[in-house]
Image (cartoon, rainbow, N blue to C red; front, top):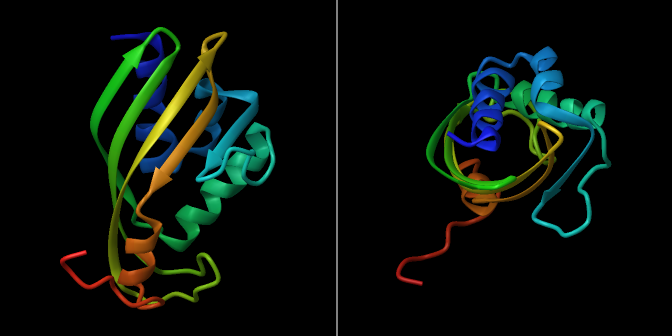
Amino acid sequence: MAAVEELVRGFFSEGVNDADYDSFEKYIAPDYQWHWGTEKPSSGTGIDAFRKEIQALVTAFPDMKTEIYDVVANDNRAAVRFKAVATHQGPWGGVEATGKPVQWCGIVIYREENGKLAEEWSMDDSRGLFEQLGVIPPIPAPW
């Protein structure tokens, strides 16, 4: 298993599923950058700012569990396909808690540098999540 894959799997398991925010130090570089659907860093850079983002997500979805379906790793990059399952129990994206069960999938590409995850680019089914929360109407099928 490539070193970057071990970092990614550890981060998902401990950092996200176990909500062990102290474990971030093992997996993430101090100047971590994340891009959630944008080229520019999303909400800043650095491990502390990223920790706050994940804490906000877990506060909104405290029972959230992620499952990694695939990891494709090469040199210092890893692509991860995942699914998250949770219950909306706190404010998220301007939406107050609905109590609704939700699930969403996504793909994240990570870059490793000096033994830590240094950067990520993430795309997920945010539209589907907001549809499940009842905030926006579903797209009629077939598209």
